[in-house]
Image 1 (spheres, chains in turn cyan, blue):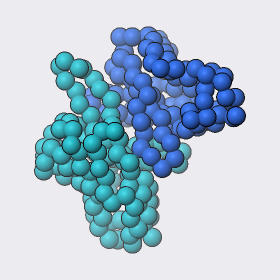
Image 2 (image 1 turned 180 degrees about the vertical axis):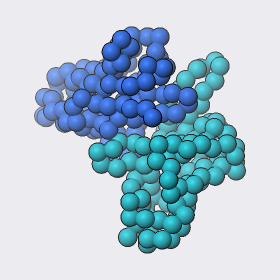
Image 3 (image 1 turned 45 degrees about the vertical axis):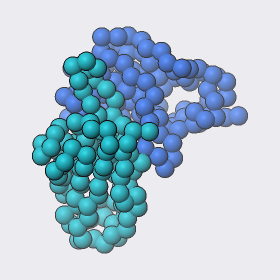
Image 4 (image 1 turned 90 degrees about the vertical axis):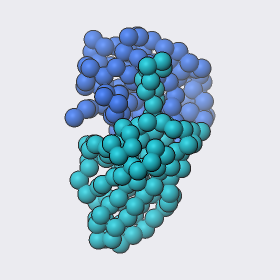
Amino acid sequence: DAGITQSPRHKVTETGTPVTLRCHQTENHRYMYWYRQDPGHGLRLIHYSYGVKDTDKGEVSDGYSVSRSKTEDFLLTLESATSSQTSVYFCAISESSLTRGNTEAFFGQGTRLTVV
Amino acid sequence: GESVGLHLPTLSVQEGDNSIINCAYSNSASDYFIWYKQESGKGPQFIIDIRSNMDKRQGQRVTVLLNKTVKHLSLQIAATQPGDSAVYFCAEKHFNKFYFGSGTKLNVKP
């Protein structure tokens, strides 16, 4: 398995509270992603990063912010959690190089977040 | 935005039979495609990939076919086993972002 660690693995929080999910990689990959997975929607991109301090929005970014201060860490923050943000969150990493071209995304094990 | 979809949400096959899972993608400029397998409680795992300059790629018991004319991708699993039971996703890569379909659940009957 690719060296990706998500923490926490499970969290229950109350509506209106801030929540931060952490993704840590040991692969030194340039690209990092946060997805959410909901029944009937598959995996939807929240935010992604293409380098330290370089981030961009994905398909469902409203209510989420991210930060990447180091290559290995990508944080996802819910500033004020809502019940609609109850989901399973996956972090992924990817690399692209001149020698290998496109490569696949590797996923972490996921964080199950419940907002009550 | 990108759109990657699957034709069949659930597929049931007999153990030993071949399975075919289909996928349609929307962006003709996507240059890289991947199939993932996801087991319950786990993250998606890479199965096989194909680049846009290829039509077919084979792995161990799996084959991916790409038809760029109709923007269609398929995953063939030979001699399907109970361990193949999972949800399968196709994904397309565009500008270093991956876009996924909603998935197909494969049930393998013993």
